[in-house]
Length: 302
Image (cartoon, rainbow, N blue to C red):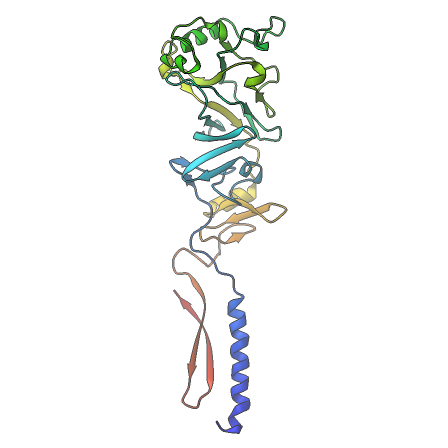
């Protein structure tokens, strides 16, 4: 190589290394976003989210999508969400160990964290099954068991064949059954402690579906109301631009998560990295006949 050409070659090499560093420092923008609007067959909207950084942080601690199943977590376990009603701001959760008419079994306890944005709706009829004669729910001074319609609910449940799962015969006396009026109310911090109450199992009925006389058709599950005061103008702008409301950073500040995975502090309008026609910097390196390295920075459409 001619000595006269060496300085020019050196300059070209330095330019190449500079541009190479510049390109390598450009962040990669994934085509697929991290937040989804469905989990299995359930529509997922704010304040809920399907994964880390999606929805509102106060809800992300309790709700997540796991293998196409939307789950609700508390200190007493993980429960499946069977439906969300965005009009009434309520969800229905199912405890796999909760008794129903078709299947009764020993249950665990159920609680709501005190800081949780959820509360048990007044539609729920909480029923304790297989309680001992010394259970505190039968304390006459406490008046913890509903009478009247409560007695009809107990008789209906004890008419189910499933009672054999908790060691009772079908149509057994309903004296070990209690439609429970919690002394702590139905808000956050609610706890149903079966060992303390000396009961074998529990169930929750959130509706009869017009079939009060047929417990096989009752709606079993726990209906929870959620706080709907978390929406904001920023979130509305984000959703109107096609993004999902989420959060980022240690301070869990608001983020608008666009469909291509990019985060914005406002909305997804003007975000150039779209699902199609994505553009980004590319480098072409060629060796010309004189032996010089030439570098072109080209903006190409993928």
